[in-house]
Length: 82
Image 1 (cartoon, rainbow, N blue to C red):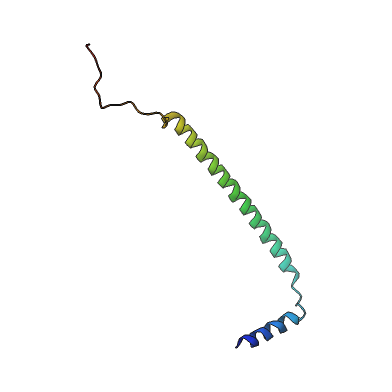
Image 2: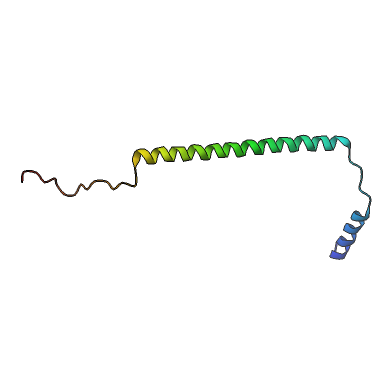
């Protein structure tokens, strides 16, 4: 099938009147769409909760480990007995 034949076939399909859909298709689409929205909302909330937990864990670790403080030097012996 060449390009012009395909184009003509598509034009014929587009010019036809649309066929009526069975009424149960609409109800099924609404049910599936609602389920998709609930799943997406649940996933979004779970990700926000995970982000909050990770932020809280990092904050607690940073406050206890204090990684910004320079560790004491262990290369020189302590001066005693002067």
